[in-house]
Every structure is written in structure tokens, then in C-alpha cells.
Length: 397
Length: 178
Image (cartoon, rainbow over all chains, first blue to last red; front, side, top):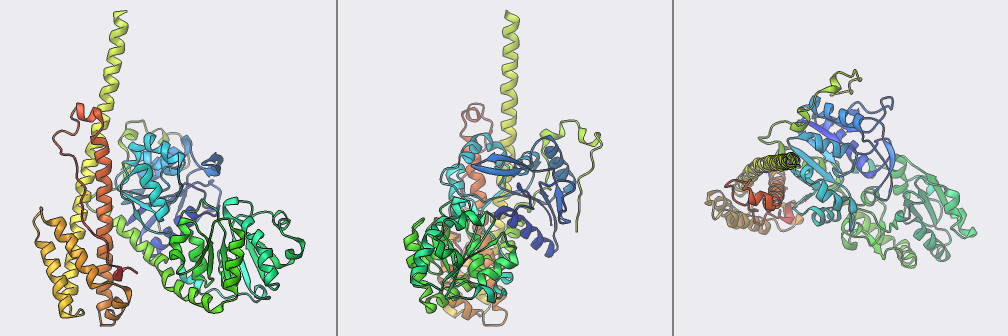
């Protein structure tokens, strides 16, 4: 199958959507499909062979934070050429309502189109605006996928209809084969945290408030904090006597992340909101770390209401500390959680997730023509061919 | 003065005309997609009942369960258009009863060849569920467009009836979920 995937965000910046797109492309290539990923990137940025760069991403304020998006006439032109040259059986657009390549592609294409919605919000301004302005474009989508129940609910609330849920995937084996690092196992119990240090939605502040309470009862406990941000600022939030027990790892790669989870007696996810799925919980469970997470809807669904991981009230440092101490004191319970999680994480393995996505591709492509440029564009003169711009790299494996 | 008015009216008529033809095009495409989605759903339902029959006759199930599943699958395949939704829902219920939990299915999967067949049935059930959602999703979009007053006043949908969602229970059995 020839599959065109559109990612609205730069692949060199880590993020849920980007990781999903990259992994999906690699799994599909592995399975023998032709895959081309259109993503924002400079022409001189090194990208994997299957990526077609669509111009530089510009940081702009969007949806409450600074996002790196690609838009404008150059990007629009490249999107059109990519669609025209790609002769895709299916076009898979991620976050189609994002004012970046996704929206451009949705506008420019017609044919079998699959869209995946990653975001979950209680009330999304973007989607409210989208529902009136973008309706004609969103109508073109043959199959809508949401990555989680909260994302599905957001979608239904704003646009109605019946999207299906296919979760984010991960390579379970890469996590389950990770081994603990001895230097992180010194002391009486290791906790870990992952996320941007300054982002209040990741909840590091909640954990740093709880940590002294945990340490009072269990002086040997230590904490690993991974994620980009200024460690000094975070360190200052701790009482001086606790600072030596906290190790800041900075931004870490996937392998180190897996080893961190494997070395931990407890992975703490103190997020305060903005989470649609919580893939990191599944990653922790796959690597064998029992999960203690705040009671957000997305997390509650992943840990099956507490069956395979423990929950505490969102933002409640005292309850976090209490639950952490309970679990640290009870190796039996931790082993039980670990074991129960092992079966469940298989559900999120790429082998399964990709076969579901492929089933969707097959269903929308069945009996349909290939993806082509939308008619409105054909009426316009093909100026792009005349202006001598370098042709977008089109690489097939 | 009159020329101005004539000009304005011509422009206004042209704008409305373009909008109408554009909307008619949207409707047309939606209806084409609706037909495709319906065909996919039919194909997936047919496939599910086929695999269900194969499972029922494979000997991996006990005779009572076999009979139950085979009967529901045959009825689903033979149902007339009017009884279709009920018959397919009944097949879903029969499968849910036959594969109530993962433990039961794991025991069944010990038979040679059974594991692949069960995986195929599970995939077929999941595909039916997705195909129904994709179909109904398109129906919802088309209905929203049908209800626009311009579409109704100018009869842009022609004589095409208001599209209907397919209402049937296609929840995959718990025992066949991974």
C-alpha cells in the first residue's frame, strides 16, 4: 500500500504526535508498505529517508503555547506537489485541525483520507472555531481515529459522529528488555519522574512538595527527575536536606528512559491536566515500574481505575506521599501491579496498533480511487512547475 | 443607478449560484462515500459471519456453543435487508456468550490451528465495529448538510432520502480482545 502521512510538527522536536508518526512510518515500512511522511523541516536538516521536508517550522503562539508549525505559500505548494507526486492509496493526516501542514493537506487532497486526533480538552477553542470554518474540509475525512477516550469525547463534543479509538503505540520489547542501572538503585527505594520541569501540567511541583514528606518516613529514598528544563530552579523548590536525594538527568533518550523506569520502584505521574492518553504510563509499565498517577481521566483509563496502577487526587501532594509510602513498604503489592500490567501493555504494542490502523486503511481504500489533488487546485495555473524551485525529495523504500 | 442595481443583483445571483453548486458537489461526494462505507460494512459483516461459521464448525468449541454460533452466523448471512440489523446484533450476542473472557479463549487456543482462527475472528469483529462507526460518521456529516435550509429549499439532494445510521450491536466479544 502507498501511504502518505502528514505530521504537523517538526520531527526533531520530541512530542507525542511526532513519536507516533515516526514509529508508525517505521512499522509500516518494515511490513513492506510504501510510506512517505510529510513534515516541517528545512531542506538542510537531516531527516530519515522516508521524510519529505515541507519547509521550515516557525514558532508561533497557538493553542496556549508556542508551537512550531509550517504554513504559508511555500508549504502549501510543497504539500500540493507531494500529494500529486505521491499517488497514495491512503492519506493519513495527524491533527487535521492544526494550522500547519495537516490543514494544508486536508485542503489540497481528495480521496481516501484517514485522520487521527490526538488532543483532548474540555473545551477546545480551536475545535469550536474549526467546527464552523473547517467543516467542509473535515467532511472529506473518511475515517476518524481518536487516540484515547478523552480525545474521542472532545471530538464528539465538537464535531459529533462516531470516531473509533486506536491507542498510541509503543515498542513494548524495547522497554521490557531494559535492565536497571546499579547507580540508580542505591538507597531504600527509587522514585522517578519524566516531563518538562517548568510545565505546570506535568506536575513536578506536586511531586517536589510530596518528596520531603516521603523522605521523612523513609530517609533512604531517592528521586530521579528526567526532562528538559533548569534543574537549579527545581532544586530550589526542595528543602536543603532533601536536595542530595534528587538526581536530575536532563533530557534523556529512549534507551535511558527505559533504564530509568527499569531502575525505579515507582514511577510517579503527578500531571495536573492536558493529558490525552498518557503513553508514558504504558512505557513505565512495560519497563516494569509500578505506576502512581494523578487521577486524570486519561490516566484512570490506562491504569484501569487502579487495577494495574495506583491513583491519587490531582495536585494532592499529601495523598501522593501517603500512597508512595504505602507502595514502597509493600513489595508484594508492587509485584502484583507489575505482573497485572505486563498482560495489558501488550495491547499497546505497535504490532497490534499498526494492524488496527492498517485495517482502517484497507477499509477506506477499498473500491476507492487514489488520493489526488482537490479539483479547485487543478483549475489554477501550475505555477510551481515554472518557478524553478527545487523538487521536494520523494524517497521510496 | 439602475445599472448599479442590475450589477449588484447579477453578482449576488452568481455568488449564490457558486455556493449552491459547491454545496451540491459536497453532497454528491458525501453520498458517494456513503455508498462506499456501506459496501465496506456489508463486506466486513459477511466476513465476520464467515469466520464465525468456520470457528463453529472447526470442532474447537463444545457442541452446544458450536450450534449456537453456527445458528446465529447462518441467520445473519441469510437475513433479509429488513431483519439484517437484528440478525447481526444477535450474532454479536452469540459471540459474546461464546467468548466471555480471555481465560476461556486462552484454553480454546491450545488446540492446533485454533489460535489463528480465534485471532481472525477477533480481527473480523473489530473491523465490523470500525466499519459501522465509519459509516455512521459519514451519515452524521451528510445529515448535517442535508438539514441546511438552502439545501432543502433548492432540493440540492435531489430525491436522495435522508441517510440513516446503521443501528446494530457490534461490540466485539470480551474474550477475543487482546
